[in-house]
Length: 82
Image (cartoon, rainbow, N blue to C red; front, side):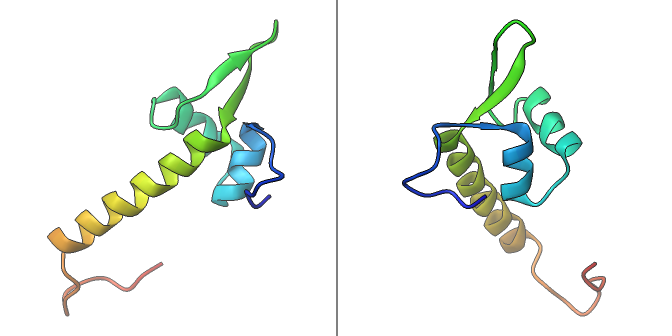
């Protein structure tokens, strides 16, 4: 589910998993570890992630990845990507 102007304000964990191309369990772990801000709604406590928070998380991950790459330049001894 790509994010755009017609997207809902809040996404389910399944929606977030689809956007990030990860499993529902991985999404839940991101939320429970506090890496991805979310809220619990309703009597059953269903998790929702604000679309803006997801975009922020993605942007932060790009920044973290750039920092990692700068600190660990690609070299002949690096393993092949998976």
